[in-house]
Length: 87
Image (cartoon, rainbow, N blue to C red):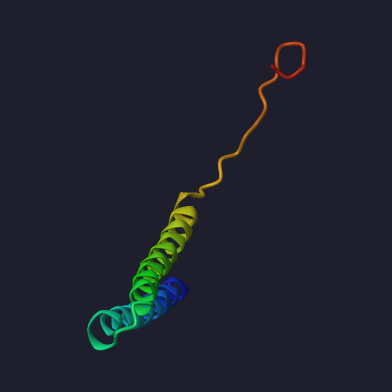
């Protein structure tokens, strides 16, 4: 459980850092400078940060669900009266 918390915290911090950089680039492109190149870079960086966070959360949730759902059911083939397995 601790490793999942560490991974989720790392993804959160990376996502927030990249999102902050994207927002600052967008604001700098719109208001501060006359460079219109910074606007799409800021938008793309912000969207990338959201994807990083969503993929990280998806990985943590998938790992949690796989750990909880694996019970291990024993499968025994059913044999017919003559000894051959049923097809």
